[in-house]
Image (cartoon, rainbow, N blue to C red; front, side):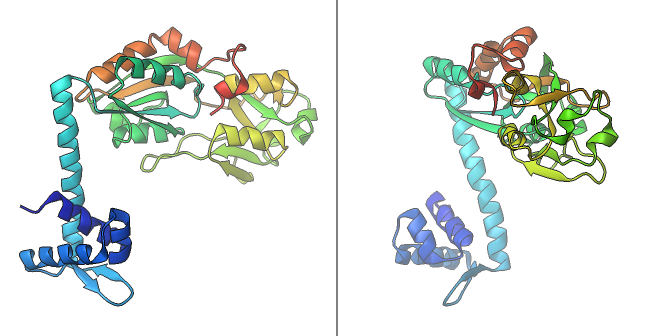
Length: 316
């Protein structure tokens, strides 16, 4: 049987295309890396790498070996994790995705309370945008999404390994800086009035599913940013116009930093979901779902403005 360490060494060489760089990454001397690779090639009776003075490349056999090595190492890691979960009932790791539309500050209470109950469980918190949330859940980058869009991709609807529940309604505001040309126009604004002005759009993080809604009209100039925090920064500088979740926009409107304008024909995601992968659920995911609570509580803490909290609590 090929030792796991040998697989990791070959994988590092394939990644860096250089024995010295692989040795540095693995905290080994280059001669040990070269010896391990040569010994494996002798054992297999095939050449895995093409070597020259500057670079190391994979042979077709090497490409095949690396592809299956990645799958094997991943399977071994999953076996280790699932075995621990089988023994304790708790996941070794919980991966949670926060959609960009939810209040971000509440996650710290969740982290604190879970650590108090089960400090051994590692938490991985990521942020996703629009269909990136569903994409992350479907492809295993997370086990739970807080704030997924209400329109569920067909690939998820048709599989019983996923479950979800409503987080209730959310509202949006079309906003601009006070000195933006749209700020002085009489309401309601039409889509034709919006079109000549730059739209600030949030980049959907989906890698495979189609991208979700953005305020973008045909022929309109666009400024693409990674988050609502970046969008607000652009708005405050008069660099464009966009829609914001009301719980993000409200404090800026109250302080006169942004101006809300009525645009009846705008459409947006007005409902959010809590969604999770119910395959192999351990006590950790059950605990988190209980902690997150009912639809009304989810709506209150994740999708509404809390005037007792600082601005940074709400905006991602």
